[in-house]
Length: 324
Image 1 (cartoon, rainbow, N blue to C red):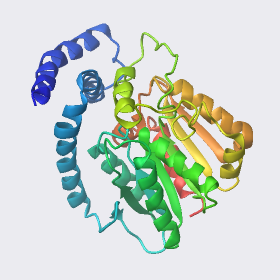
Image 2: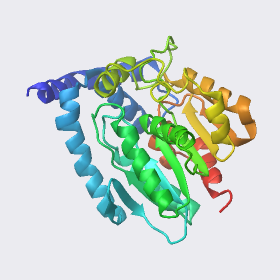
Image 3: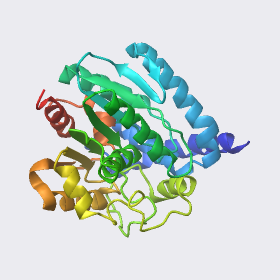
Image 4: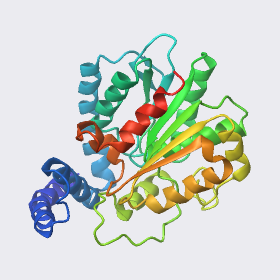
């Protein structure tokens, strides 16, 4: 019960020190003050978060913030686990699957990002999947898969968008479409996908890396989601257990856009996965990596970025507009 108090106390002590240290070192000089503050804040949260505080303190706060966001956007009805954010007749449905290690609730910046996409793309419906948090594998996969099947059965053209763990879930939907001979989506956007959940990456971060995501935080998520996960399970470790035959079938129907930051700790596995896909069909896969970008950089910072500094967002809009 004391965990949230300990968490807040640590942040109160650590944040001023971390902000000051980062600023004096010049590590964040190329960023604006608000991006610097956000990155350091999230890094300290990641370093001090525990499962109890996550489940009973952070997620309820995010839940309230998201409800305010839904009200602000005039979000539509709830159908099962699907919350309609924007509905437009006869338009493709962008099914958004949020990240957070299968444990953390959606952050409000995701709603800002989705609103921007809707405004810029035009004819587009947007739906958000509220899958169970902190539930054991494969609950999240099965819930997202069930909502995808419902949309397809209702005759919708479905596109997928997922960030971090949500990217993992999007890619699992593609694998299940092949395994169960279901209709594949036309498009899939994976933002900083978490590809290897139980396979530790042997990657030493560069000393000037600015990513806020840490291996300790990923280990905590993994221990909640899949504590006894099999390294050879392709639903948990998509990149290390890459199935050429399955992904060949996926790329026969689905165009993919993969976005990442060059400074994020997941960068090596994302690059390897994208290259494996491009070796199958380079025309169906586009990879965009942002220099000095952090984990899910485009979703958190691109909407407010100056013109010319939001390459990933601009590419996403072009990708979604194509074929409309």
